[in-house]
Each structure stands twice: as C-alpha cells, then as structure tokens.
Length: 267
Image (tube, rainbow, N blue to C red; front, side):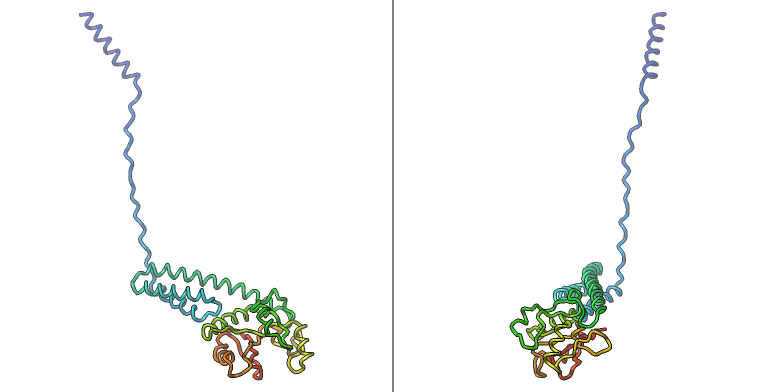
C-alpha cells in the first residue's frame, strides 16, 4: 500500500514539474484581413466647356498667323477627332485629345512671348540702328545674288521679329494659293545702306535720319519690305497682296510703290 501511494505521489510530482517548466503556449496567428478600397468614381466631364474649348482651338488654327503649317494641320486633325469623340459621347477621350491640342497651343504662346520680348528690344533702338541680333533673317543673301541691281543694297533680308513672323505666315498662305514664294528685294536697312540709296538715287529714298523729329525710311524700323515682282499692278504678287496682306498686318503706305509693304500689326 505504501509503495502504491509513493508511486502515485512521484507520478504527480513529475506531471506537475512538466507543467510548471513548460513554455507558455503561443496563440495561433490571426488570418490576414483583406480590406477592399472602393475605386474613385470617374469625374463627370463638363461637356459644354469641352465643346467651347474645341471651338476655340478650331478658330485659332485658322486665324493665328504664328502657327506653322505642320502645327496648323496637327490642330485641325485633333479638332476633328475631338468632335467625332463628342458625337460618339466618348467625352473622356475627347478631353484627352483636347489636352494634346492645348499643349500645341501652349508652345505657340511661349513662342509668341519670346517673339514679343525680342520685338520690344528692337523697338528700343533708333531708326536704322537696330543690331541684327534683334532682327529675324527671313531670306538668305543667296536668293538676292542672282537678281542684283544697281539700287539693291540688301543682301540677306532682315525684319523686326513680329513683322518677320507675319511675313512668314503670309508667305505660307501665298505659296498654298499660287505655288510660289513671296521673295523680297529688301527689308531692314542700316544707316550705310540707306545713305547709299539717298546719295546715288536722289528722290528714290529718304535720308537715313535716326531721330524721330525727321520723317525717315520705314525700312529703318525693320517693318518695311520690298516684294520682288510686285511692281506691276497686274502681277500675281501685287493682286494677292492687295486682297490678303491686311489680314497679316501689312499695308501699302506708298501708293506709287506697289512693291513697298509695311507691317502695322494685327489685333
């Protein structure tokens, strides 16, 4: 009996020691909780505003002279795609197309801003005294080399930046209409060039006055240009200029010189 009790006590002590010395049980890891975030609702497109922007882009593609031919074609194509998307009620697609077209518009505005700054610098100089770095070369000297005359003192043709941009746009339109370019005999003249004409061809050119008190040549401002081949009123150049030049800001200031056209600016 005593042996049985001793065995039971020993067994209890062994079991108790095992329980006390064992490491605490760890809880089973919790399952990962998956949280679902609802996708943001697509923004509603302002269709009237979208149509207004498309119309504005279409108008600028036809009227703004600073656009190059490639830019004009790009904007026209994008406007057509945007209008087609609007008709198909694909307004988000139309909005993306308009964003592309407005990027071209933004680049054009940056070009205009730089052009305006350069023009202001050119305007700050007296007549015939504008450095060539503030003017824009619109025609290389090689074009005039084959048509040299005694009174042609201009080689490369320079114009004030705003006048140059308008002339280049006008030349593109003239080329589209006739297949020719508006070649120039002369643009800006410095003091030496104007003096040569005044001395050797009395009555043909003004003396190169640099002040504002005397009326001097408009060539000294960089806004006047002499169009090659426009001397006759029946010439293709003169008839086209008479009809279209005003749209680009050019006017004929001397009625007895059909070739003389001056940039007065556009609104």
